[in-house]
Image (cartoon, rainbow, N blue to C red; front, side):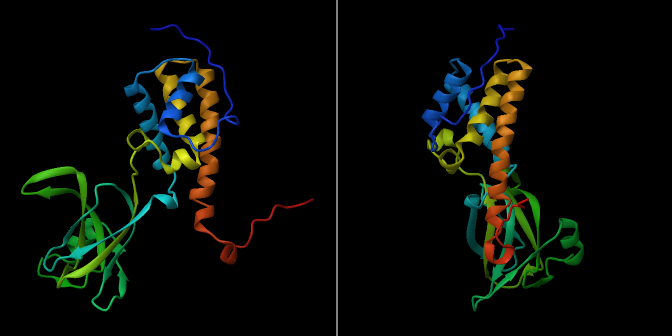
Length: 238
């Protein structure tokens, strides 16, 4: 086991907003006072992204996909970057949107037991991995709908997706607008990798939670409300 050393806590006030991947890597090295391989830095960063994207649903990470329900086919393949579903709608020939209700597979199998139970789809469920000619593709999910479409219908899927990692793209919304969450999340992974002192891990975990708290206020709070319906925030004055 390598020599353990105390890491100094560097506050992030002096780190300018809008951090690309090159800057992120250098900041990790400078704060940890250590050189890391590119593979290690990529691992720290992608682990931080995974935690953040599964903790907060940001409006900037929503997508719409249009497709087609094929007559007689009850399955629909999901996009490969899908993380979770906001809504699924069938689009009638006149342009009318009808939103399907989310159920589980058991409900759909029981409610529509026969493939010949056809009509305008009303319910959907995440069925599981896509199966193509007996080969299971664990990278793609498929949906099952009921009843089985009795005609070709347009479909629109509104979903939360995994963005391309900053490791690949060099810059992302997270690095541009909330670099404190990304940096502190990556630092936690880096310090654990170095087998840092528990106090150091706690310090950066605290900074990470502070940044995540602010980001959660934005993604799960402010982006889901407006002053017209919810009123302006007021702080009690004594």
